[in-house]
Amino acid sequence: MNRKLMNDMRGHPTQLPKEHIDWVVQPITRFIKVEAAAGVVLLLSTLLALSLANSPLRELFNSLWHISLGINIGTLAFERSLHGWINDAVMTLF
Image (cartoon, rainbow, N blue to C red):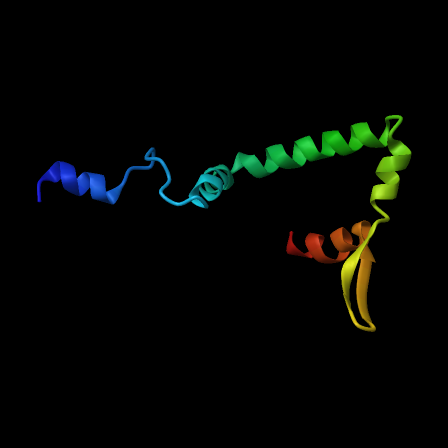
């Protein structure tokens, strides 16, 4: 095979995605690989939470944390508030 054809078969990082899911996954993976990305997301989330907590929407924002989320299967119920899920489940990952 000639060299140009072999390069085309391997693909290039700037090549358009071939699968539909790649349109979503590739930008996210590139963003996650940037080490400062997590810090930027955390900083923006903190600023958003502080501004909402100190705005006229504070009652609505506070009620958001008390929304019940969970799984109900027959009589078995596993529910927690959004605040509980974040404290018990998500924060243990970090």
